[in-house]
Amino acid sequence: MTILYIGIDLAKNVFAVHGVNDAGKPALVSPTVARGKLLELIASLPPCVIGMEACSGAHHWARQFMVHGHTVRLMAPKFVSPYRLSGKQGKNDAVDAAAICEAVQRPNMRFVPIKSLEQQSQLSVHRVRQGFIEQRTATINRIRGLLSEFGIVLPLKASTVRSQAMACLEDLPGWSNAVIGDLLSELMHFDERIALYDHRIAQMAREDPRAQQLMRLRGVGQTTATALLAMIGNGHEFKCGRQFAAWLGLVPSQYSSGGKARLGHITKAGDSYIRSLLVLGARSVLNGAQNKTDGLSRWAAALAERRGYWRAIVAIAAKNARMAWAVLSRGEQFTMPA
Image (cartoon, rainbow, N blue to C red):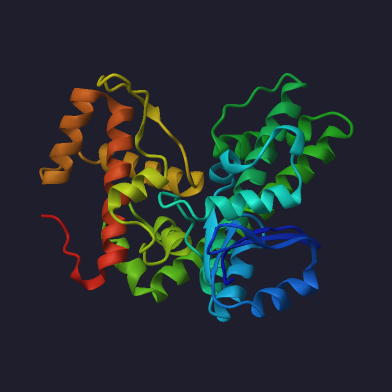
């Protein structure tokens, strides 16, 4: 019988493969497939649907399998775990592969968009830049913590920490002078690296017409536009803008029963980096809406007055997410709202 669905549990060196035929019975069970033999095994099979968890290396393998005519579906691990058998069988690679094979057959399963080489290279720029920002923040906090041991308490503002730490550098005793000096030097190094990556992101935005169209949306700048392109591409994996906003976690969680709807906080599912960029852009839209009379500004100001500042911020971010999906999926057919 022909194998229709395959589940692969990804790893570094040894992979587990579980395939089922048109009768739903296991037809290919290989719990230990070496890394060098995996592509050879998949290439020898007729075209089928391959499911994998979206983890390290998943997009690389997806591109490799698609070359041989297979349909590849990536899923978030949390959507696969309900299909994993428990009890005496326990958890191992073979069980994980069987659970992936079962999950990929579900008609309502939500899948992760497969990224191209260009998308992953652009996304790596964002990831490294964000890592430098986190290291810079940690260095600033380390400077504040060390100086507080000598009775010098600095405010949270980064520019103030730089200036005041430099001003009191000569008054520090013993080795603390050299330590704080090294941290300030490291801080300048992080500033230079982040500025370099900002320049690279600006260059990516200039070279991509889709990013230029995304930047026409208020609250969407170079960083947000290029991150959206690197993450979802043309957005065709989503049926509508609301589904994309839900994928980002910008919709309220539901606790409804008996016909009574109870809406809670936003789910915060999906990629936190893009969600934070959209929220920061929404803050700039709302802060600048007080002195403007266009429709979006009036709606944002009225919403903030009626529902509160942070609810308005999330609503604007969700609205921008929906419009960004429309820009990417419709292309030139998209028209800006009045």
